[in-house]
Image 1 (spheres, rainbow, N blue to C red):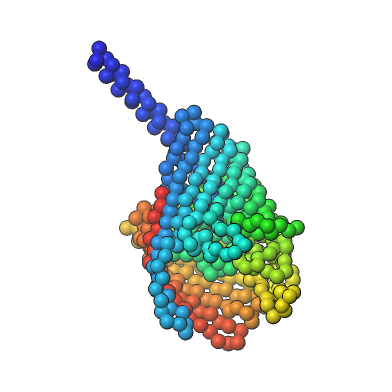
Image 2 (image 1 turned 45 degrees about the horizontal axis):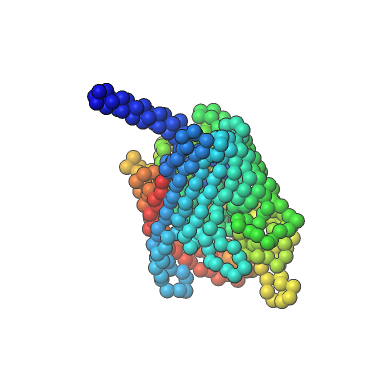
Length: 407
């Protein structure tokens, strides 16, 4: 009798294990959300309720870095910091068609300086999705707008330790509103995505700054040779080593009506509101370990970019108008060492050319991928040349080492 009970217990245990395995394989902790930075290397820790009515996936990632910085006219200095520390939750409730995503940031560089009267920027993403079919994604909440390629990519999917100078000045960032994405990606044939957004235009975590302006965004992505392997449009470098050439061409237009900040969703407050228009163009190519990227970004305003304090005319602030190009190329060896080179040009608009310089940036890097983009070691040497309106110039450079790890 004891033997029968023992065998029965073993059979029940095996049956339960098999059911759990099937359930995990079915869901695979892998929810692709088109409005969020996504890549399929680290899928985190997944929890699915027994009745399959609830799923939650937990991920974290951390960037630790140390830099030696030498700016023209200043003594060299060392800087060590936790650059990014993120915690992300995503999943569905009730039905896989109703999804959610939450991303929180904790590093000082993420949260930013705490200022009196301003909100703390812990919340990066807080958004709900309705996915009626595999092609359509409808979202409501705070998340990234469908902007330039490098901004849409997670900072964890970058080849170098940070994004370009043009991304820092011309990007359109996170915002609160509605988005509708029509995704049409196929393995080996022409693919395209259409992404639109209607948002507040004030950036993330804004309260008490309501106005009568909204922001509209539209983006078209074309992949003539089919979709990239493992969603390769969402990370830099050909770590997958594409067996066939893959190409992405994309263009986005963004208009932020009556914006209150110097860079639309980012920057300091303006003294007068301005309507801003942005054009964002990208190209990405990958094949057999080789990768190349090129981007163009610009921002214009219909009025003078300068705004003045009505109570003190000597005090002013300005919309950062102008344009820039980024060029980036890389090769990854079979032992997962990657060599990267990048060149950026940034030209400011005429309204502000006496106030801020034109910039040229040169970067070279070496990355060792231990577990693709989720665990890597990065070294970067960066050199900037700043040219001012009066003919003077400055040369700044830094050397940086960074470790990225996450799940």
